[in-house]
Image 1: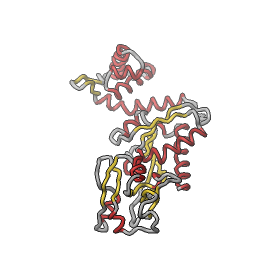
Image 2: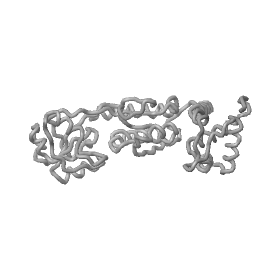
Image 3: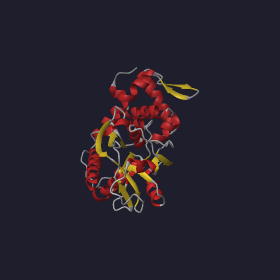
Image 4: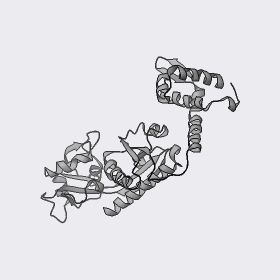
Length: 304
């Protein structure tokens, strides 16, 4: 093992980082835009420098040694620090060109991402936004590896090792088509509420949700006829049926042809928040976009 930092090529650390992430010489070479023999040669030099095989071949591919696993976090931090060191700290939204990737549910897509895009087109027209679906099991890995920049989540679903900030408190409302028999009523009784046929959103196809939990505390149940996996289809279903739905308030379009009917019971709302990794915590561009998310979220709350 060599202890002279002058003998270490920083490109070798980039190669080690890629090998640790990808677990394959071939995939690491593709990620680094290098040939496979070139990355194999870099791995040989890394083994010589650290005095350790770093990876061993198994029937399941390349597996990092204990020494390689210990190097994973500090190597990634060194590369991040160097990238920050070499990157100009000035950030001008009007001229900045970058791609910003978020993960969001369909709810967050409508409630946060749509107004965010509108604001970016005014203040940072060259910033591109990419949106991915939320994958709770891979979220931390996606953020730590730089595959994702920001996650629109809730405090309960935010991994402990991530930074987070609340955007707003969301409340539930009951909606139906504008000519629904109950739409003109000033209030709806619990009995009427439970008698109606309901739609709810469940990614798992369940027929129970937070409203049913609130009803259960009153020893009541409702009739759920449809379970869908997206909030976005609910308005179309409501317009063509006499069903009702309990949805987050930001899911009801402004100047909508849907009627909001006062809920006859308290359905607990939730906090919408954003989460990000330490690697982007101090980046000026990322800080600006996160601040914009807070601003547009507060504005949306004022409108609603």
